[in-house]
Image (cartoon, rainbow, N blue to C red; front, side, top):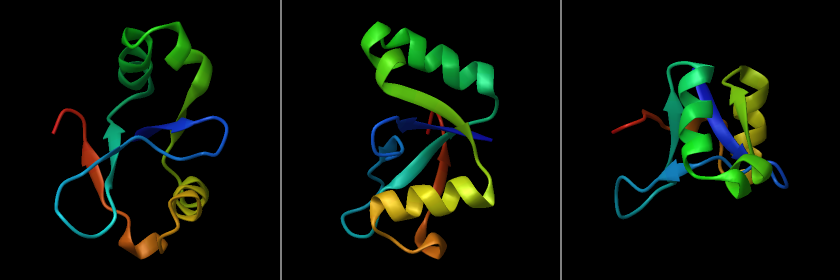
Length: 80
C-alpha cells in the first residue's frame, strides 16, 4: 500500500469522510497507480509530492505531520 505525501512537510493526501475527527489518508494499492495519479495532476504536483510505502515508520511520520495519534489514522483506498 502507498500514500502520496507533500515533500516539504510529509503531510499525506487525505479525504474528509465525516464532520469530526482526523481526515483519512488516501492510499493506492501499488506504487505505479499512485505515481499515475500524481502525474495526472501535472508537473507541479510531481515536483511537490512523493509516493511513499505505508510502513510503521511512514505512518508515525504522517501521524506526526497531521498532529494526531498513530492509532487514530484511518486509511481509505483510492478511489473511495
